[in-house]
Image 1 (cartoon, rainbow, N blue to C red):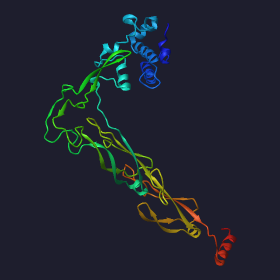
Image 2: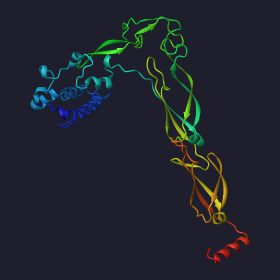
Image 3: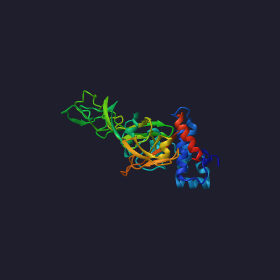
Amino acid sequence: MSVDYYQVLGIEKGASKDDIKKAYRKLAHKYHPDKQGGDEKKFKEISEAYYVLSDDTRRTQYDQYGRAFSGAGRGSQGFDPNFWQNADFGGQDFGGFSDIFEGMFGFGGGARKRQKRGHDISIDIELPFEDSIFGATRTIVLRKTGACKICKGSGAEEGSKTEQCKTCNGSGSVREQRQTFFGAVHMLQECKECQGKGAIPDKKCKTCGGVGIEKREEEITVVVPPGIEHGEMIRMTGQGEAIANGAPGDLYIKVHVQRHAFLKRHGTNLIMDLEVPMTEAVLGGEKVIESIDGKIKIKIPEGIDSGEVLRVRERGVPMQSGKKGDLLIRVLVKNPKKLSRKAKKLFEELREEGV
């Protein structure tokens, strides 16, 4: 066997069709002659290997006889460099070649025409801690491409009539022929005159020049859901860049939550530290503290140790279920730095009692 097609694609002999297709995609991207650093000879070799191994009949004969497919131009059994011309992209399945070339190099048939889509936009916003907990509404101003406000994206002046595009005869696409080392490749391309619509207005919109889109500043209202975390993304479908005769892209908003003065977040719970004097830790008491949603009164139990945690239920982060997380208060006992004579004497008495 003069050519080992399995070796050419870098796969095992028992490789599946998916493995063969993946191997070809990877190598075709690398060696395509239209790409910088491409290799036409290598590309033709891997294309020939894929042509043979992607078809069950051709692969079986190759595995049995080997030489039947060892090079191009061997009659009806060999690799036909003009098979693209014969196929003519009529919606048939030629071992996945049409799919691969349509995705990689823009070769496609009218049967698989895909809707164009505008570019996505990604921005960052900074959010106060409280707004990340309870949610908020923000208005942002973006300069981006959007549908023309005058013609509403139609590209036509008000009251104008439409007529069939003479370039494509109303089909929205034109057939082009391109010469490649495979031979003549016939492709259907979107008509540039009517942008694929098949019809053009007799009077084009003066604001957008008939394309239906324009660059402008646009106010967008962003709804921040309750409980959003630092680094999370909000996706707004259809709020990205608009495109003529296609769907707009999406807007992605990355949220950066500001630090709080004394609160931290852990999941759906909020955590804070609370300093209490030693006497209050020993004797217990009540304390009024500030929480995320107002003042609350808590009870300090007698004999609490430094580092113990008090839990206040349903005063944390809202959840989708409608419930809330908890507020966790870590008690830090504050020892006095200076003692009066009277206080020092009392502590000495306590020490004598073994306290």
